[in-house]
Image (cartoon, one colour):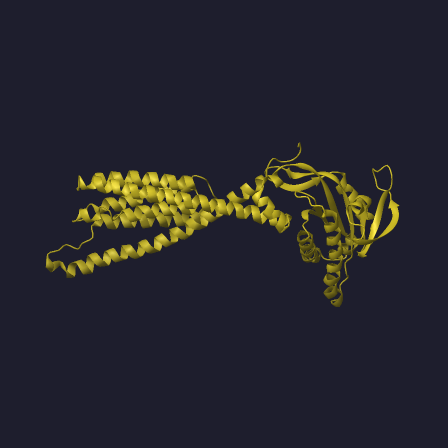
Length: 420
């Protein structure tokens, strides 16, 4: 249907933004841990070389840790320290960063592995570096990027094979390379799968969070299993509830702006909770007004009755809301409500950057006109809404028809006195 967005793209953008924030946080934490661990390791290597090795030198065994290993450890420490500083100075995200970090860690790990070949017993070190390379793959998964995981797996295999095959233990190094490559492939596939699952769960969490702000739990659960319900634009019969705070403009003019905001932030959540509890969809707030819809994206036979029931509960909840305000000497607020039912088009509307679920049609305008005609504390419903409800659902009083702008004839409306 023209005018409606094809899909809720804002959920994808919101997920990517959160992924980038989490990736940056993870890199900071991992870099900080690596700096601490490597600093301790470098200190331990120095202590071992200077003290322990000398103490046992009389046994004829050289316990000295090669300088190349210490240099490689120092280089890895410096690399993560610089990364930590970079993330603090330039926190802005750019897509290539995770791949550069993967390349840096793979090369530094290769440097540590190469330093191992200067040890007096290189055969012992053939498979020892495998654990360090596996750590590079796992850390790539903390970016929640499958591409980074695949790149890490490829670089790890290539660098390990190059360093090992150039070592002094041929052909044993060839067997070690084959075994290590199988391990790296397995770790890469497992990490890839975990990252994919985490991305799927995080994406569903973002969608569900967004949905829960506008749709009732029942509808949100239905959309989770049938996403096309919210994506497709469809014409359907809806019941629209329009509520407005009576005399709000005059009242707000006498209050400090912050008090007005605090009042609305305390008032709206209670009203929205009632709407969602009765299966309604919150379309939007318009200043102090609230617009809710029943019948879209999921329609039920009793949508009109649900809407009127919600309106009655909203008025009751408002009495409880006003009690502490009156006790504190504040002015109580009153709300007038208009409800109308008819055909409308429902779906996502907007742009890729800003999108919302909306109901388009004359029904919304009629509900607004009926609301304007209602007095403080009144609930007025249109004739169509009345016809959709059981005759004994509510006690209704007929009131004089209202003249609405753009209508050829006055609107027939009824005042809701109470639930029958």
